[in-house]
Image 1 (cartoon, rainbow, N blue to C red):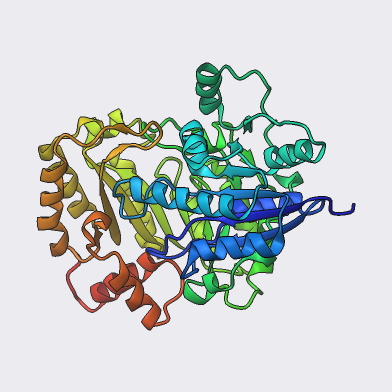
Image 2 (cartoon, one colour):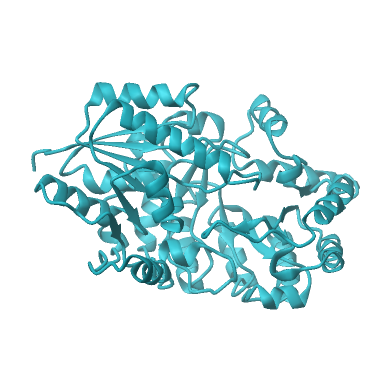
Length: 457
């Protein structure tokens, strides 16, 4: 098929802490439409002057349609959303100043705040939910000189669809959810090589969707509650191919949780093991259904680290957060990781669901007992979806608690306070030419200290 429209896709994300992340969403959309259209990707992550880069790309490419991918609503230090939203507004203004082509917004940030960001950025359209098929359909409408809906929706974002329909009176049916194995692969040939020069980590998906109901998690809004699985053999083939790319020496599974469904995770691990475990990799995981057999299979398949959203160390808050596990499950999984040599990083959200300072102190006591390789602490700030104020009732007291306690424990990270996080850490990792997720190096240092008889606290 002859290419019919010139489509410029802009990845706006510039977050590089603790490491820059390959824009898999933008690359997936590029891969899904470039059989029918001429596609160029502009990645602003490493641009010294991002607005000038946008204007230059628009001027030289003269696109018929411009897609702007917005990944986050906050930075990784979990401060206010406003500086990042103001930056998005500047990027959109640069686009508008250089071209009158339709501007289409997409990405996780748009799915969570479609109408507010559409209005603020002055865009023509937004894609809510999964982008590959929805954006392709929108392009087809524009090509036919039709007027597509202002908001094009993918059926994966079920709760978000209900809210949009009620608020805006939308009637057009959503674009069906995709068969993941039928999609074209991400346009990885368009990725900026600097991602691999800095971090050497490539991103992969084995599934989309999350069936859990954790209280504040956005994944069901972004990918739906129905879990759609990729063929494990195709996943393993993709990883084996990327392992041959110069500079790629780590993989990261960006699934909401790698180990659910358990049978699928085992199948992916077996497929990777048959290919000689071509890359060491890290994943997001949950203590639910994560038993010793699966941990052992993950290790044989190349897993070197797992990140878990443990969130709290008190049973009452765990129940209020609707987490699908208990504290004994967390202890059991920690022991299994130690047994099989997989590093673990647990995140904890203090002040959520009415957690008091005293309960937060209980969480810190649990973390001391658990003694994970790495513990990342965030103080609950706000409802990211509706921009409603929802700060923890004891926000400042919780930060003061972390400021006192975190420096005493080498594996504790507090992004909001800059404790073992930020530019200093990035320079250290880059200076030593360390590869893979930054927290793995902290975990490795702690385990080496333990072997030498050092204190793990």
